[in-house]
Amino acid sequence: MLKLPTLSIDKAINVLDMGLRTVFSTAIASRPYPAADISNAAMLSERERKHAAALMRINHVGEVCAQALYSGQALVSRDPANVEALKQASRDEVDHLAWCEQRMNELGGRKSLLNPLWFGASLGLGVTAGLLGDKWNLGFLAETEHQVSSHLQSHLQQLPAQDNASRAIVSQMKIDEEHHAETAEHLGGAALPAPVKLAMRLASKVMTRTAYHL
Image (cartoon, rainbow, N blue to C red; front, top):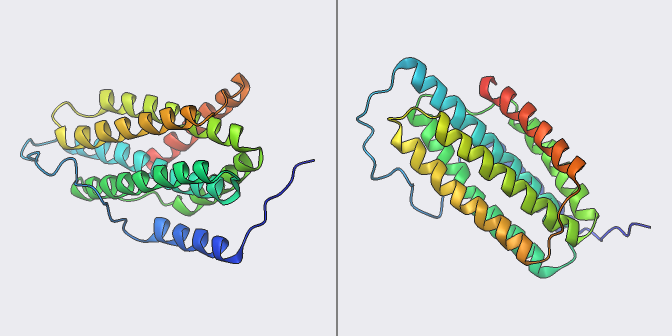
């Protein structure tokens, strides 16, 4: 029988507060903006600008989901080392959240209108993964990061060639995500079954296609 961990009111309130700040506030990065020293002088056409902004909105949604996922996983994880790994990943994702929002603003874009939905669904998924045990919890983290890294690589190919600012942000995000995956595997994350990986990819496709427009 699955043994449910004891959850304190303080933990629940912290997650609620984090969710409200993630969805409705502007994130503040702890690391320098990767595109700070890159000139934005290269002119993008209106079509290119809108496309780049939509791609960065997808990335922003991914970071909203990451905050919810890792918070849900950490909420029910039993191993302090795993909780710390999840919290460190979450701190890096706050940087990503801030960078994506800044770049969206520079491109004249906006956040996804469905961010509250993305956060709520991802939080539930994170809690579910965490309840399965730390081995699977970390395995889910590793697989998530591998898929995100692949997704970011595709964005590097889709961004307008002259949009070096967006490219610098996505490149740094990709480095961070790969590091998170390696950490999760080092801590003992189990490889997920193929059907679970496929379901995760299909869910990601739904999210990215929706977030591109909404």
